[in-house]
Length: 411
Image 1: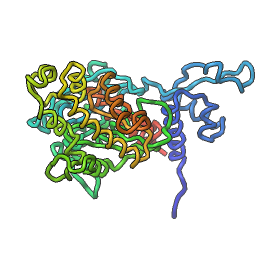
Image 2: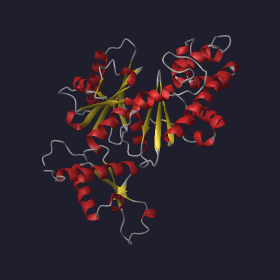
Image 3: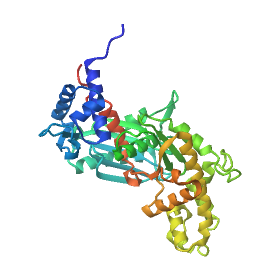
Image 4: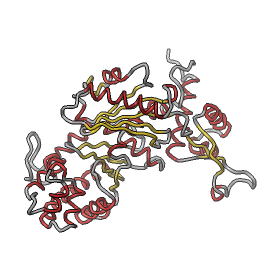
């Protein structure tokens, strides 16, 4: 016989809705929460008062006067917010060039961070040891114990999946072995996931500007180009299919070759190594003096940002190559916006300063127009703050999705 929803399940669902709504929409009053969630004011008061008593929510003061026009005189809305110090969150990301680890509050405010350079020779054991030692050191620095921390979240970039012994099981990535390897008596609960999706989730969480009304494409640049399509409901995406098909997409018919990919594909034209190979054809002390000196003669150090600066500094030969590269980027961005009907395209690991981003956007505007250019933004999660992706996983799995309730709580 099928049983109805339990009281604990109903409680969890109501609390989950309250937590996520407050986080995404910003501080809200009980009146606003009741209207948004279509729950009676009496029920919302009972739910939120219980959560305040447990420390999950806190009252942060009265709403501004302009929000009170419909309330009787003398009555003011009291705003509720997630308690930033309810617990703390540890996160880590295993990237192809760096392992980052750090600690943040429930508001994802960074408190501490550590990093380890990663090479082709860095072993799985060394990576695991760094994450565990860094987490332990960070907790010690902050005078925290296991009970003070909501969890340790670890994101793994796809290029590192094999090295970390993460395998496919029934068509899905199975992080069980990695989770077990990081689960020690001294560590809080461990959660592991795909870093591409988690980085897109962390970027969205840090915006804290309400539930988006359209899709967002998160574009990660490295030796491979990965994308994650984040939908308004923020469910996990099939990032592998998106990345595989995007890398095979032709953006320059008859263009450059790469084994296993069509000529002129995204992978052959725009991966970091592909762009460096294009500039290498003119790269020398004599022909590109500024760029050569800025990168100390190492073509592996060349980035889009440095190419823009080289043009401004008088390296005229760079301009033609950069225009070709940016035309390809513009075609890709145009296709992503059209294919996924996205409102925004978030650039991650592009290494662009504010000035560099302005240059990037101006090229896109020239080649495919204002509409596409205005949809492009830089990720709020960059470089050594990548560990926030792991923190987002913990907050989602061990806070928002369970309404702040422990799975061990009796029914």
